[in-house]
Amino acid sequence: MLYELMMSLKGSVPGANLFSYITFRAGGAVMTALIISFILGPWVIDNLRMRQGKGQPIREDGPQSHLVTKVGTPTMGGLLILLAVMASTLLWGDLSNPYLWIVLLTTLGFGLVGFADDFLKVRGGSSAGVSGRVKIVLEAIIALVAVLAISTILPQPLATSYAIPFFKDVLLPFGLPLFVLAGMFVIVGSSNAVNLTDGLDGLAIVPMMIASASFGLIAYLVGHAIFANYLQVHFVPGAGELAVLCAALIGAGLGFLWYNAPPAMVFMGDTGSLALGGALGAIAVATKHEIVLAIIGGLFVLEAVSVIVQVASFKLTGRRVFAMAPLHHHFEQRGWAESTIVIRFWIISVVLALIGLATLKLR
Image (cartoon, rainbow, N blue to C red; front, side, top):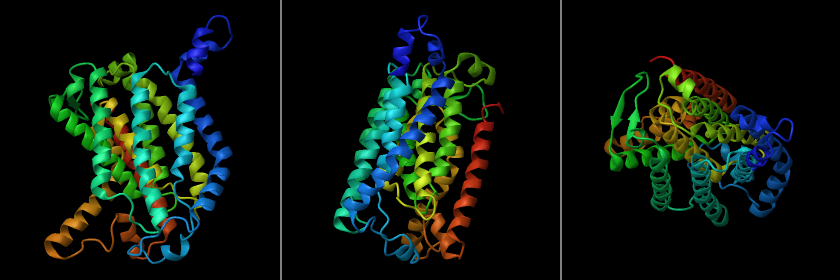
């Protein structure tokens, strides 16, 4: 919105040219999302608390300490994140950029699925919301539309191929059908991996901000012909605009963390976790760094794998590999303090992000 306005005033209004720089608008997006979160946070939380009564239903098969420490805390705090991200991106982004709209609508779509799940949980007073099968189908449909849309604007051969980290010119030619299926897997997998990680105060939002910052840098670099050529990464025209959206995610995340810091005043719920994971997956597909997402978002991958391993082991052998899944609950059961788990997982996220960003230069 501001971009179009200022570009029309370029040459007649001093400073209007600043809005042509993605870095300037990304800075504006961070601050705007943060301010929106701070202003709307108390109002959103008060309304959620008033409407939900008992707050988020706590899993009875989860850590027993949660039945005491987290009972009564409202959920659906992801609404605050979505409001801040959407408003900030629409204000500072180039609204003629198709990548921006695809990722924004994907984020909103996954957020709506999460909202429906949270709503049914709160209304029913149990941890059972939308059935897993229905949720996966809805997510797959949203991801399908997103990947097909991205494939229509990506230049060939990137539109049907996957780039390999650490190799400058290597592309895996998938063909459109396999590329679409792989892209759907990335988006849906990323969404649910973030959802599984969201189990302790502040645990999911900080790694999400770290990943957003990493992909904001990646988007800016692959969308800039000179930098892409220097780093020998594949140039994706227009993808740099996603740095503005990533900046909005960081600002909204910081604002949400203010209220989600232990002891949390609000949980993001599936409304936030599914939306954030879906956004991250869509950005990875658009920037051609799908595989790098598995490195930068390695913490989310570990959490998801721990659940898969636990379920598979129990069904095949009747034994559990972990004391409890996802992984953060395993360490809770082993006696680690919640704050210890959260901070150590943050440290792991930083290390993984640095390794992922190293793929940009080590080629």
